[in-house]
Picture 1 (cartoon, rainbow, N blue to C red):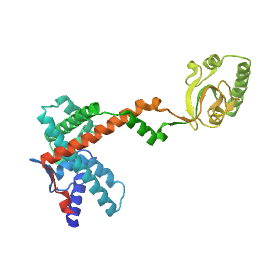
Picture 2 (picture 1 turned 30 degrees about the vertical axis):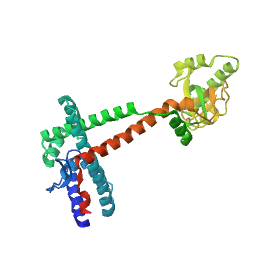
Picture 3 (picture 1 turned 60 degrees about the horizontal axis):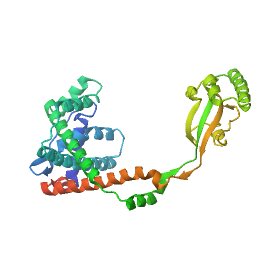
Picture 4 (picture 1 turned 120 degrees about the vertical axis):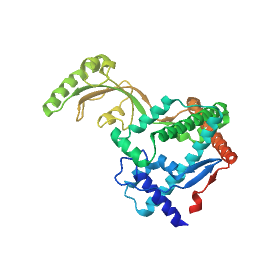
Length: 333
């Protein structure tokens, strides 16, 4: 029945607003009636377990000014996602314990400090702790389980990734199917001589100074040396190096000038709101598409990671079947 779900969502709001370690200190507190959302073998996942995880997200959701209908939909989606994650974490913790994995007190302390840091003060943390009804010992236990789940999950993903086999034909197919990813835009490698000028008078003086430098450059002077001596921009000591730039990276008129120059050419004296500039283009690269050989080292890890994630999902699904997971959330719809 929909009304039952509505009661569920009202309870979640009460929990979110009552702190549940993650939201800012709340002003009003509500008594929470707990409920069983799922079982994983002999392990039980309660409404309060789920809310301890998503209290901060629900608190932020309530600040968005959503309509009651939108709020209920978003709350339900959050709860479903959180419940699924709680089931997976419970399965992973069971696997970690079977494997004899442990979590050090130091790891728990570090995670607890990260949690405390979300509060403006220790007093605010303690107030929310008291309001949530969760003891510090219970928080540490919850954090220990979280770390165990993360550790065993990462370990399995690494194992699956190491064992994944990616063929050359799969790499080539990915390249063809995603060719737009490997398009390279036109770009130029740029240097500059820059003199700052904040007033009109300073602008005129800086322009005259750079016109003289430009004449020296036309006469064969070394751009690197003049930039190192005269430029006031970062990179002056590297010969005025700005680096590789794509269209739109520089302000106009610098952008237009840079992409109108051929390699080795220098610009006219250019004025911006920052000061006065002379640009030099060292190299140009036209827009093109990277070859398969150039991007093979990028594609293979992506495919390996995708295969590892698919195998991880199948492994989790198998753990769910073996554990006899039962979910009761939908019974309230």
